[in-house]
Amino acid sequence: MRRGTMYKFGTVILANIQFTDTYDIKTRPALILFEEYGNVVVAGITSNLEMDGIKLTKKDGAVKDSVIKLNYIFTISEKMVKKVLFSISEDKKKLFISEFTKKLKV
Image 1 (cartoon, rainbow, N blue to C red):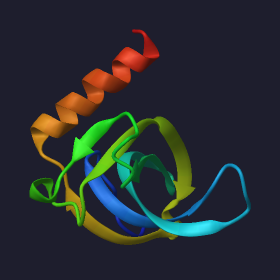
Image 2 (image 1 turned 60 degrees about the horizontal axis):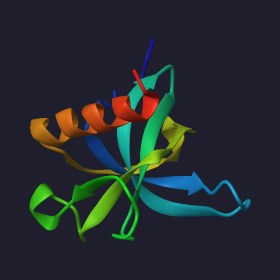
Image 3 (image 1 turned 180 degrees about the vertical axis):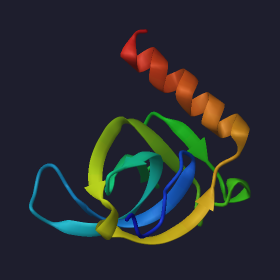
Image 4 (image 1 turned 45 degrees about the vertical axis):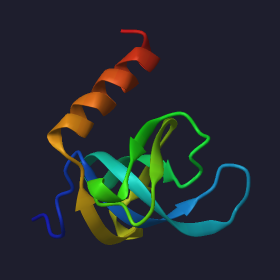
């Protein structure tokens, strides 16, 4: 029997994330793309506004203006999720899907 939270596309979480260039684990925000069997696929979020991606503002629910990075997609265990922060709007979800699909060249 399954226990725990079912994470849905569009939810922004705070999670322990291991960076690709080090063994360091840091607590960072991420956008949930989907969850299956305890694995959560996410897009990283940064406060570096110079990076390409989908802009998130305080009005969207972000603590500070940020960017959902389209080029930083990875999988974490659901055990790494520390907190649910907020959900993005339907318009932001559609924008993410549109821009991510362009990256896939579909």
